[in-house]
Length: 186
Length: 371
Image 1 (cartoon, each protein chain N blue to C red):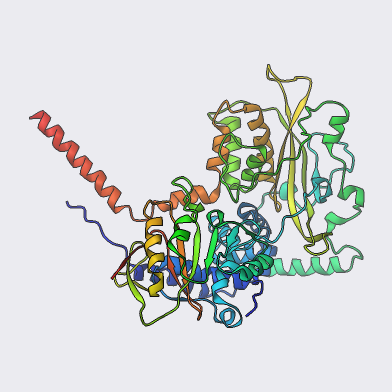
Image 2 (cartoon, chains in turn red, yellow):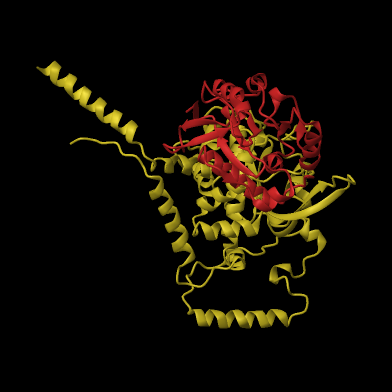
């Protein structure tokens, strides 16, 4: 599926979905269906959020990276310098530990990591706690993502710096895992 | 009496959110159209756009309707929306001399090039509350409309009468003063990138562009208060300030076409621009000359632009001796100040419980010492 630039209305709708996902970690939030039907849902967060003043990188898909850069005018940079990083498969530990976490004074500079997350029979279930979670909040991730989750937990161990993650599935469901959320295997 | 902490309920919060929406949408009166807000409350729309830092009249009207007339809340809505929009391009630098004025006054000089153009302003109207009935007001409006339509070339209203191109782009008083060598020349040869306060908070000591940007987005009331405090308040030192220009007009916004690279006008914004002339009398200043402060903001908001121009020059002359720059940068933003104030309404159960416990501990220690 080819991508297309989002209208300001569509961009706002995607933004609202992502904001809702961060507000309620673990909640499955459906991104706008009409967009998910016509282009890769994984790219929607980038199409909505990056622009000529932000940087991004897609380390495992150069074609997708070039297409997003073309549509948004956003600059492609190295993983460590990127405001947004998209991974089409669960990222290895080294990558997660390499992305920017911001500083105590400028925690907003921490990277937003967008990760593909598909359902499998061998999915891991994570118990979530922290602001915005409910007592029963859970997150289901594919087994291959266990390294990613372990690295993510290390990356958020020294608040307020850290990273914020969205897990996106191919049907357009997004789940937020902000740095304030504690995730452990249940 | 015990002090027990409680946990706020998500369901209660959602119910409160629904209540606001339901009562706003289902009120008995007829639907408030955006056009009505744009036309009848135009100055409020301008103020909201200015403080939001976003030129979007229809969105500002929507925000005012949603906020039920709360200007600060409307600014909050617009800024939040603005932050979700991608930036596609940077505009070309605009020259304030390209403003097509709808109003221009020069309080400092009676006869200036281009003349005075009073335009649409309540400055010259009596402050009598009009208490005529709605029917009478409608009748008068109808009569005025028919009179206007019967006058060829008068669609733009009285202010547009007999106004030629020269009057729309008049020479500045400042140019005259420069020709007379009466103004300190602070123009710089280089052209540094302006400080973007939407990306990085400005902190003193800040570039002049950061100060001007902060003031142009500041709360109008806060800026007027800062100016008045500077004049008559505890900071008090009397400035001999005269306004050189007060302008309100339209300015084109030009961007480079991403494909052709040619300049393209994408919209026109209205701005209020003020130049304030300050009489220099400090021991380390050139007393044979004047200096000039500058103010510019979105929409028609003369109060704000005048305060801004006066504070610009006051800040320059102050040169960090007082907290003026800090006050301007850190305390005049409507969202910063109102946000901090309103956060006090959020639960403070834990902090207050610790304060109570400290009081009890101190009382216990005092009683122990007394016995």
